[in-house]
Image (tube, rainbow over all chains, first blue to last red; front, side):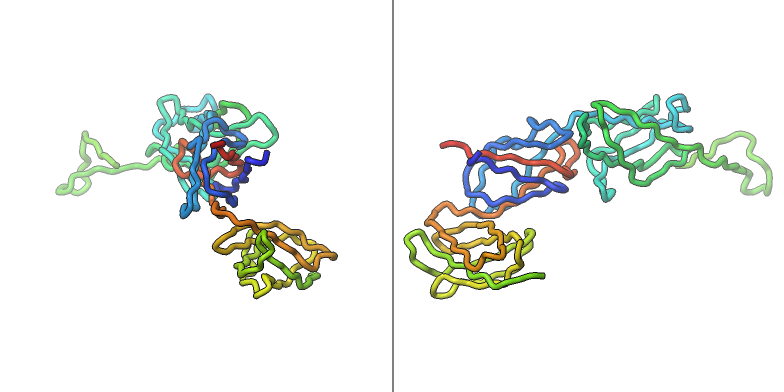
Length: 180
Length: 116
């Protein structure tokens, strides 16, 4: 179509030579809702050479966090995660696992076809009783919803002694130490 | 690397020659910049069987041409028309609507010129 320009996008950027004017915008981006691209119209004007658009996905990725990485393990509450790009740069709001151990990324790309966008994420925290792997992880969603099991192993058990500061070795009978 | 000198001749629609700025790109890298001579000509050393984008502009006309240099190519004549509607290279950014600034790894943005 003579009045149409298709701009390939790689890693968020593309370029095209274009006359000034007003254009309708759409998208062909696997894994995303192509009707969601914004803005839907753009005016290209002299002196402005960069134009930004956004697009939304509709998939849901659940990270189920437990002490053994299975769906029947003891859930870990308070594990935190963030979406990333391929270089590990973080984006968007942090998500946190609930009382069932589930942390949910909404609006992630998915595709039932051959080409499936990669979703990158990493864990940024657990509760204070569990260790976690903070390395960059990736996955692909071939259906609209997916669940990944994440293991946060129990941390090493530590022993604490609590004695009187003025009577060496005299144990404190009843009390609490609070670590934060 | 098999190369040859190619003559690029730029002229306006009414066959008048004038001074043009010529910028040549290969694989989206700018490899050559220069101005045409009194006859509207400029010469550059091209690699055979390569595609080049030649961007030609002056105050009256701006155009971009994609050309393939093969064994038979010795001269390229580029006709520019008067145009008050300059076109220029623009950059498109595409990011995720729900994760601010997260770049879309692979995709296509399609634009249509709206009818007046």
